[in-house]
Each structure stands twice: as C-alpha cells, then as structure tokens.
Amino acid sequence: MRRDRNKIFTLIVLLVMLILLPLGARSTFDIGLQSAMLYGCSESGSDGDFFQEMSVGRNWAIGVGLDMRMTVFHLSLLASSDSETEEAFNIYSSLSFDLPVINDFIYLTAGAGVTTGIEFLSDEGSRLGYNGVASNGDESFSEVLGNSPIHLKAGLDFILGHAAFSLYYMRQSDQVLDNGIEGIWSAGGSNMVGLALNLSVM
Image (cartoon, rainbow, N blue to C red):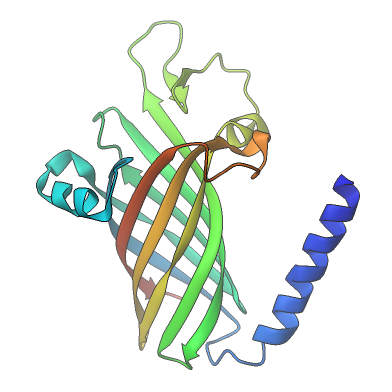
C-alpha cells in the first residue's frame, strides 16, 4: 500500500513539472537571501481573535534564511527567533511549487515542510534541545527531522527585478513528520502569516 502511494505521489510530481514548467517565465535556477517577519498565536476561535492579538509583541518573530529555486520547485530554509524564549530559535524547512498568475510578476506558491525547534540549555548534561526535548548527543539528523512538526504553506510572490516580496499563510501543526500527514488538520496547532523579502544572488 505504501509503495503504491509513493508511486502515485511520484507520478503527480512529474505531471506537475510537465504542466507547469512551460508556463514559468522565471530563470531555471536561482539562489537568494531571505529576511522575514512572522506573526502567529495559539489556536483561536475566529479570525477576528487571531488578528486582535497583533499588538502583542511575543506573537511576532523575525528571521533570515536561504531561498533556492529550480524550475517550479522552491526550497526555503528560514531561521527565526522563538517568541517563547530568547534561548531558542526555529528552523522552517519548506518545499513548495510556484504557479504563475501573471508571468514574471505574480506567482502562487503552495507547499509543506517541517519546523525544527532548537534550544540552548544550561544543563550540564545537555547543551542543546530539539523540539522541546533535551539532546543526549546520539540523535541522527533523520531522527531530529522525524520528530519535527509539519507545516503547510501557501502564499503569493511579487517579483520586482532581482527582488521578490512574499506574503503567505502557514498552518503550523502539532503532527510530527514520523506520524505522517493523516489527521494533520485535527492534530491541533497554530496559524501564522508571514511577510518576506527575497534578494536573488545567483
């Protein structure tokens, strides 16, 4: 069953490439630097409640990162401050695809990724913590990634020469990658919005 799902997913990815590749007017490959501002708060009952908390400073975070794109696929790595504590930061790793709305000007982006929380601890036995758990020094990269919560992401990119302004929505789930994507919406989590500036360097 899982092998069949992997085949279907691979087929969908290939079809997306074949359909969207001729539509894009952007360069085939580029690398850029990213600066972003994120706003998010805990699960709220309505959109009104969500936006009413924008005046609360701890709901805001700033970040910097690396942006890489090949054809219609987009990889973003963003390190941002943690609103809960000064001794921690979050790394948002996202893979998305770009769909042109107006060629070479406005692009719709949609994708998913994982959020890895890293904390500097004062304990003598452990100096680092990953996703709220103290490290014992034996964790592999795949284990840390597997215990990272999943996020979904969608937004718009506005292209102005070598710069791109991004406005996006991100659903931060409590569901970790090892548990799969089933039930991601019912797992709890938080809503976030972001504003980013990307400057192409290659």
